[in-house]
Each structure stands twice: as C-alpha cells, then as structure tokens.
Image (cartoon, rainbow, N blue to C red):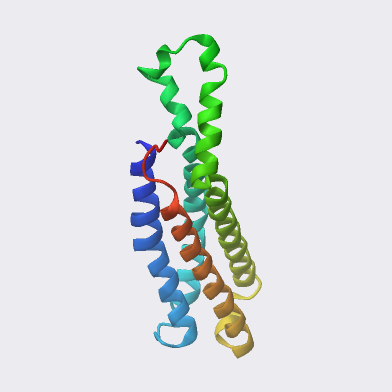
Length: 174
C-alpha cells in the first residue's frame, strides 16, 4: 500500500473516525455526560491496548513520509533515473533539501512526532493509573478528575496528531 493510502487509512479511518471517537466517549463517561461507569475501566484498558498498535503504525507512517514523498524518490524512476552518475551524486539531495525548506517539511514532521510522543505519554500514564487502582477510579472524585484530565489531554494530543498528519503533503511536490 502506498503512503497516501496508508495515510488515509491511519489518519482518517483509524485515528479520526474510530479511535478519537472512542476517546471522546471515554472523556464524556468520566465527566458524567454519559452514564456507563461500569464499562469505563474495561473500555479504557481496551482503548489503551489498541493505541499501542496504532501508535506503531503512526510512527511508521511519519518515518516513511520522508522516504516515499520526497521528490528525491523521483530519481529512482524514469526518466530521472537516467541522469548521469555525477548529476545523481548531488541533484537528488539538493532537490530534497530545497523541498524541505520550501514546504517546512522538518517542522511538519516534528509537529507530528511531538503530538505522537504526547499521546504516547498520556496513554502510558492512563495505563499506569488504571493498573494502580482500577477499582478506586469509580470511588474517588479526586481519582476521577485526575483520570478525566489524563483522558482529555490524550484526546487533545490525538487531535493535534491527526491535524499534523493532515498537514503533511498528500503528493510528491517539487
């Protein structure tokens, strides 16, 4: 599957239209807007388990962006692959360098990595929190507020990550 299709699947299908909605539901359950408190701890644990896999896929997507969407990749196919060796020794890197400058590629990738890192940290804290007292979550307002804040921060990180992935160019640009 090419990068653009993976991006659509991961960002739109998996992240925005599935995962983010479940995290939103968890936030609503914790805030009391949705009453399904018995289900909340198991839903939260299941969501966090699924985040681990999705996080790996997202990291791969961001890493592969530079390899697959850089105009440097055009030098691997015809007609640019026919350039002489001397030209191929400098032109692909020059084109990639200019592309990164013109479209602020490093900033876009860094934004995605930072949001992913924040989401990973929130997910880790939520899992740690649940392991240290899953039963006490429903009994203590202080714990509930803390977990609620963690889930809300997680939700914001996911939204920021999705936005950052959306800003990555959808096609090879020169």
